[in-house]
Amino acid sequence: MKSFQSAFLTLVYMFGLVLLTLALGGCQDDEDTESPRVRMSEPMEFDIFSSIDTFEVSGTITDNNQVVFVELSIETLDYEVAVKPQRFFISGSTVNFGTTYIIDEPLLDGGQYYFVMRASDGENVGSDYQQIQINPIPRGIERFFVVTKETNLATLYQSEDLSAWETVEQFNLDVTGAALNYRQNIFGICGGTLGDATFYETEEFDVLSSYTNMGTISSPYFLGLQYDRPREEFYLLQEEPSFRVLDKNAFGVNVPNLQFGFEPHAVFPDESNYFVPEGEITSNIEVLSYYTQAGLLASSVNLAGEAKLVTRKSFNEVFVWQSGSATVLSIFNKTSELLSHVFTRPNESLRSVIEIEQGLFIFSTDDGMYRYNYGNGGTVVLPLDRSPEKMLYDDLNGIIYGWEEQELYAFAPNGQILNSWKFSAPIVEFMIDYNR
Image 1 (tube, one colour):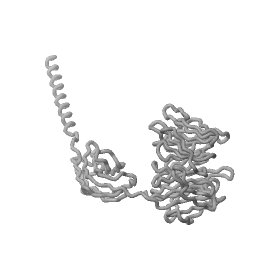
Image 2: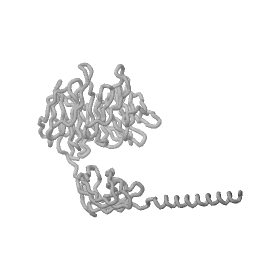
Image 3: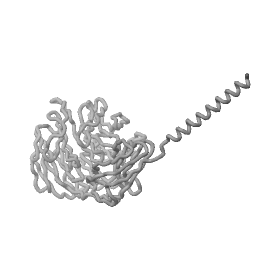
Image 4: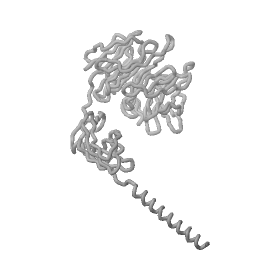
């Protein structure tokens, strides 16, 4: 009997092994190892496009199962991504894919690239490449803008060649800031106690978006407005305290809340995060705070005075220019959170500063104008009899524009005055409308 039971159990065991082997073999047979086959029809090999262009893309994708998505990208000849990929979700074992592709990369270097069409079935990826030529668009200036302020009236002027200025629009608000996104032709302006923050397209000046002013007579709500070209973001400074992050089309993205009891002076983007100089409302304490993209406070350090400029020095360090009883340049280390002073002009309060090359700065104090080179520590006194409240650098022509009160002037990096213009009211902002 025991011998019969043993034989029976052995038979069952062997039968189980056979079933398991068949099952495993079946699983292996079901594994998909075949990549989608991609055949691109458009663009064709050696087609020529500009860095701002629109063209048709078409191709056929086939797969033994189901195609999940198609991805289009532009890559260098070393297969490095040059333009962020665009993904399209599709379905089918045979797909005739077609779309209109827009290159919107005016700063892309000209040269030879690969246009790549990739398709995935969820497990495997197939691709096809076409070599194309991309020509850069010549960079130029289309016009100049000036915003002036007179009590509760702001005026926007424009000029094509700086020879004459014409009035474009007038706004009933006590303007606290204005900014221009010349790539999308969007102009924004905001009021402190009177007037909302409103964004317009710059051809017909139709309203694109607006944010309500919550200020009172004694407490301005909007404290300023900036635009950052590399990040393609507007920053609307608010009294709450917070700053509103808007995308390049002036639509809301995020509203980071800042430290209680402080007000923001400016926003300086750092990769995906933000440096924000803040002043305590009830004292003269100034700090530089570092916020994550989500708006979380990462660190905060006390300053000698208000930070007028924060720019990148290296991967882990930034330059910090401060205005107080002295003009101070410091270096802030994001890892150690240490602030080290590297340059000081005692008894001179910083008014404005710009960086014309990395580590090369032009700055104005209440005593005069200077050029400072961090690389060699050299300081040059500029022969300029003005000390601008704000400056803007035109890197296309190597010209610096400064303004204070009602006067706008252009000067060379050596301090030579090139031209000047007088307006009927104090200047709030000067902007250059480049074509790209």
